[in-house]
Amino acid sequence: MNPETGPPWRRLDVRIIWVAAAWCVGAMAAALAVLWWREAPWWLSAPVPLVLAGVGYEALLWAKTRYRLTAEHIEVRTGVLLRRHRAIPRARVRSVELSANPLHRVFSLAVVKVETGHRTSSDQQAALTLNALPRTEAQALRAALVRRDGAGQDQVIALGQRRWLRLAPLTFATPALGLGALGATYQGLDMLGYDPDTVLIPRLIEWLGARPDLPALASLTALGLLLIGIAATLALATETWWNFRLVRESDGGLRATRGLFVTRSATLQEDRLQGVEIAEPLLLRSAGAAYTYAVITGSGSAEEEMRAFNAAALLPPAPIAHAHHVAANVLREPDNPARTVRLLPHPRLALTRRVRWALLAAAAPGALPAALGAWLWTPLLTLAWIAALIAGASGLLLARDAYRNLGHGLTGRYLVTRHGTLKRRTIALRRDGVIGWTFTQWSWHRRSTLCRLSATTPGGRGVYHVKDVFMGEGVRFAEQALPGLLTPFLTGSPATRPAAPVLPPATG
Image (tube, rainbow, N blue to C red; front, side, top):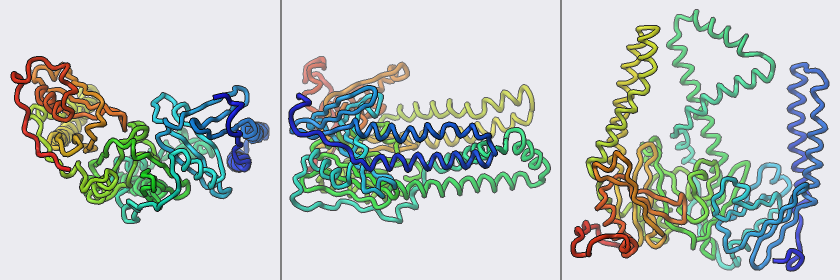
């Protein structure tokens, strides 16, 4: 399209300059306060003009940025030293996300992020971001990009409940955040000039060495760090999932809104939906709760799942029954296929393989204490066998659980696969959304004739696995799921091929 013809180009909202100025002033004030506290020489304040120059750069960037929406594209022209002109076909838009941090909300602004679903190494290349527009204009742009006509009434699918926040600490991030508090304390003390390496830590070690109740003190410290981790995960979950709301718009699109200080809203087009995933981390599963994700083109990649805001998330951590109810509603099915399917068990060789890996992994925790005990201090040998025993017992339990969680099956329009122990995943994929199959055998697979069957789909992570099945069973399952797709690659006549296993009757 000729950039000089078509609809007029529009500016971003000028108030974004005030937002940038507020951030810069806040950062500058904090830095000057630290310098004053440490009685640093005045010349260390020289970067202050650079901070002020940053505000000027933001103003110049605002003046050089334009966008417009045409019948076929959304276009953006931006850049100060290097000018860029990006045009994204509206047909490639997969999701539109609106976000607003506290300063944006003060000025009634919103950031619009347009996702195309194109996977690249850079988020900036995969998405188009407009920072920022008036809130009403941002909402109108989102409605236009997802082809919403505004007629009809939204249907509420799910509303977040405050009691679900108690599930937030049931994650392995809780102890990690507690330990992170130690690192943050160290960095803060070092920034304030207390020199923890040469002053505080040696004094702490000396003080601990003189304490007769060191084991009790260590236990209390661990408990304190755990409580800090619990508080941190609760705070993070409150910020991330506050006021969660999932609705089906009048044109069928799915819109999820959430956030306490930073509000975010993502819209997914229903015609891109390929299925749903129920993810149950080990601790959440013990409480009967799970995450719910959409398998949808353009969102839900493995990288997105690790972010605080995942556009494919359909629900906060919630009771499993509620997760299945929302999944069924999103799929427009009477019940979630991931719950109604009868999963076929996997070979016992899959259990043997997991037990073998668990025992090999159990040797690692005791290896270092054993080596140090044999070389330096004999009592470490006791620690080595205790660590190996605990790791071995835990590994065997996890191996058994991982095997019991394996399963695959067909029901109605969906194929279902389940696997995992630290995070059990049950994925229901639409059969007509699978565009290919991959059979993988490693060297340890070949003797047992086990393989990993992978379904390729344009949605979500792109590939979903049926793990550790016999090669013949994997071929038969793939043929039943998508009759004819593998036929050109199979040898032998249909009459000489082994009979397919009897799967549960299709429903729906």
